[in-house]
Length: 141
Image (cartoon, rainbow, N blue to C red; front, side, top):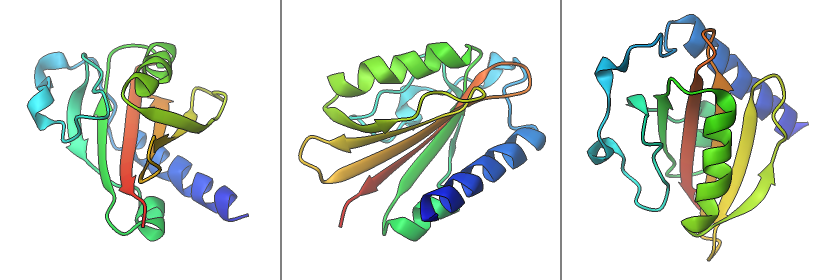
């Protein structure tokens, strides 16, 4: 039941972000450099833009010091989803679960090899069909 509530909060936040014009809208002028990406152990998709700091309220309730980022791409959902399925293990992450994409939304959960860090990703699609990612990196207590 708690997981369902958290999942509902994530979907509501995604809907609000998309409704408020946070989708890429094809504007590639706001490309972000990897210098804006705080984590060496989580790959940044090379064509990411509109990089912003963000942590979902549900994640904040579960972890003491979460860090989060969102970004847009002009690529499709499958491209971004497959990128993280392939690249995260190369950077030392073990999948805890990977929800099969439903309605162009996927929640991916990862744990560092030593079990000290948890990562949750939500990959979704904006109204134009472009992929958006929300990534939270959370040290385990």
